[in-house]
Image (tube, rainbow, N blue to C red):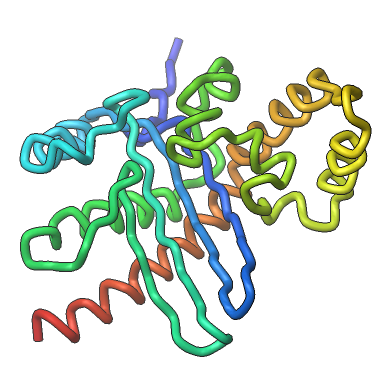
Length: 222
């Protein structure tokens, strides 16, 4: 009997979220990817990350030290000037020669995910309901706060009617349905780990990180 080898990329439990916030004259877009790293025959992602944490201890993931949370926030002012803010595990990574390996590591992981096929996405069944998702996908923030719209808007929920339904609940004092929030959060968590959604997000986030890297290289290292 022939047994086909299991295809595994060394990266698993990958989630993606895109969030927007608005203020007068300011638009904030957060693009976030969360993933668990392992070492395999071809890639030593976890070992490489632990070397980075050894040099920059502040970059350790507080929920699980095998996870990395990669974020690029763009802030647009009056539809013109734009600022880019890359973050790893909630910490800003300012552009410098010292942090360039960190930025390259972040970009390399996102590029890898963008090349995944459907079979390459591995998600543990329990992961949807874990702290790594509920408090780690949007790093150190509650996913449920984005389900209700209290902290910002998830792109997958725009025009869905979800935000309006929670506004109705909040208006009825003492009649908030916690079960509804839990069930909605669980459903949204699964969508945020859907392979096609994550793939599309990785392509977009990868393009943003490339654009940022090109700007940094032109400015600091030419």
